Image (cartoon, rainbow over the protein chains, first blue to last red):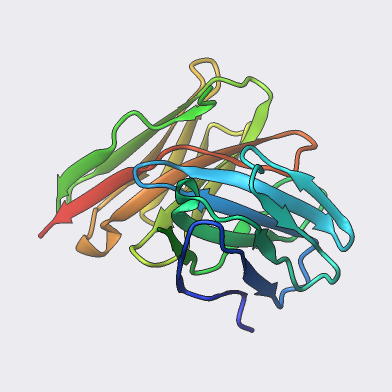
Length: 115
Length: 112
């Protein structure tokens, strides 16, 4: 049971390049999330998904896209990288028991630098 | 608009003493609160949570207190250990929502 895995761990992009951050979970969780963490800041929600085929915007979605074709995978796409997207990106998943008391499990993060 | 606030960016405590980390929130619809711990180069890991129907939850050395009237929660770690040195985030969610709102974190350093 690997939990939540993210690839790559590190990446440097040039302005205008595109890339996909991969996220996979093996816990059969319905809910999945993408966050970014800027230095000295908390985690800001980019996008989330409540199940395969269903995604929605979070607090800071501009410049990103997501898809959820399977329960396990939730990739995050950057189409035209900008320096403002330099950050650490965390993927998370969450089981839902209906009680609202479930916790999120986080991946190890992807450190992205845009130059 | 920062709905969840951790006003102390850092805290230093001697080993064996109590660490108290604070968190304030503004949204009265929040009904579930969590604390996460984060080591460098790792993702956050869940530490402890509390529902709004309680005012205290305890798990070993960790206790979370919730004061709903003050919209304030705190995490107590006693006794503090050097391995507790990390960044601690509080988070909150509301009824029927799928999202957690995170604070900016407090960096705890436990001095040996």
